[in-house]
Image (cartoon, rainbow, N blue to C red; front, side, top):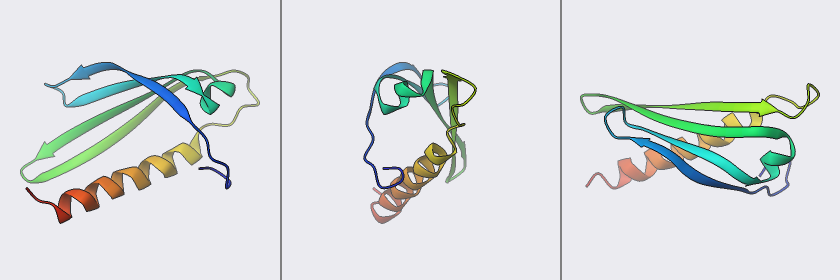
Length: 93
């Protein structure tokens, strides 16, 4: 939800790299495609002992120069990551 408006995105898993601990999602339909010609999410996990560092990378091509960079999306992804962390910490098994 951005600016109080619900938005949707339909994506597919484009690639899974178990060795590098990464997943690439390609957006196929939805609100993002009204602004961007292409849009991908790449999720990568670095593990150091018991610590895991999650990195989200956004690859996108704007439909025009007037389209903003997806900064609001980063806020959403940070919230998702924190929610996942909370879930894992409350359910350590």
